[in-house]
Image 1 (spheres, helix red, strand yellow):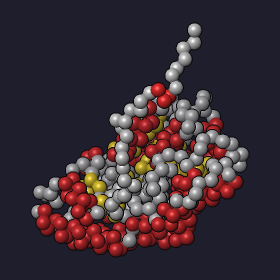
Image 2 (image 1 turned 90 degrees about the vertical axis):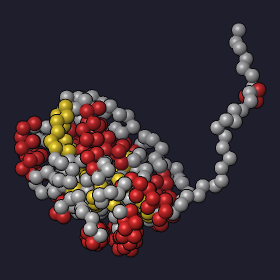
Image 3 (image 1 turned 180 degrees about the vertical axis):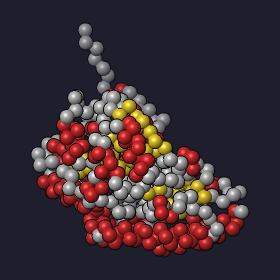
Image 4 (image 1 turned 45 degrees about the vertical axis):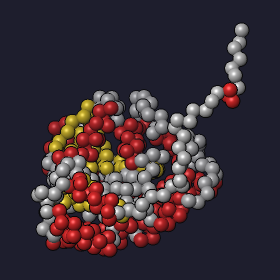
Length: 390
C-alpha cells in the first residue's frame, strides 16, 4: 500500500536559522594587500548590468572579446585562451588536470608558498612530483633550472612567475628554450603578474599559464583566465584516458568557448561583463603604460619604506613591482599592527606566509591601486603608527 505524505503545510517551518538582516552595507577599504585589489568603478558598473542568457548571441560576442583581450594581456596567439568559471586556483588546476597523467614526472621549482601548492596539486593527479628549492626571497637561475631538467627529464616544469608570498619576480630568459631542449612543457603561474609586469608568453616559449581576475586586472575574484598553447594542446589530445575532472576538462570547455558554442555549464554572465570591462581598460591604457605605472609606483613605495628605516626582503633586481615584502620591525606585532591599520584606517596590508610568516608584511600595488596617492597615504600612516608602536 502506498503511503500518502501529508502536504508540506502540515509541517511547521524550522525558524532556527532565519535571520532578520538590514540591507548589505560594508565599510570602505583600500586594499593594499596581496589581493584582491579594489575593483575599478567601471568594472563595478559593468557587473551591475542586467544579465542575459549564457547562450544569448550578445553574450557569445562578449565571450569572443574577452578571449581576444586575454590574448593581448598575455601576448599570446593561443587558441585555447578562456576564463574558467571559477577563481584563479581552479584555473591553476585546469592546467594540471588537462596535461598531467598518472606517473608523469612533474618538476616544480619552489621558492615560496605557492610552489608548494603547485606540487601538492600535481601529486593529487598522480604525478611523480620532484622539486628544486630556493629560499624565500630568491629566484632560480637558468643554469639551476637546466640542471634539474637534465637530471629529472620531466614532462612538465611548473614555475611561479610572480611569487606572491615572497615578492619575487622570476627571470624568464631562456627557460622556455631549455624546456624544449629537454622535452618538457612549461607551466607558468602569472596570478600576480598579468597586467602588472611584462609578460610575453609566446616569445618566452610558455606552454600554459593561468591567472585570476582580482589582482592587476582590478576586477573582483570569480574568474580564472587560462591559456594553453599548441604543445600543451597536443599533449591533451594524446592522453590515454579522459581528463579526470569533468568541470575543468578543456576538451569540453573549448566547445563552449570555441566556434561551436556548445552548452557546457551556465557561465557567470555578470562576472564576464566585469572581466571584459577590466580588460578593455587595460587595453585602453596600453600594456607598456600599465607596466611602467606599476614599476614607477613600486619604486616610490620602496623609497618610502626605506625612508622609514624599514628593510625590504628582496633585492631590487628580483623585486616584484606588484607585491612588496617588507620586514616587520623588531618589537612590532605584525599581525596586530595590520589588523589595527585595517580597523582604524580602512587600509589593508597582508602578513607573511610560509617561511615569511610573522616576519614580513606584504604590500600590493595592483591594477588601479597602483597609484602615487595610495603610496603616499600608506607611507604617511606607517610613519605615524610605527612611531607609536615601537
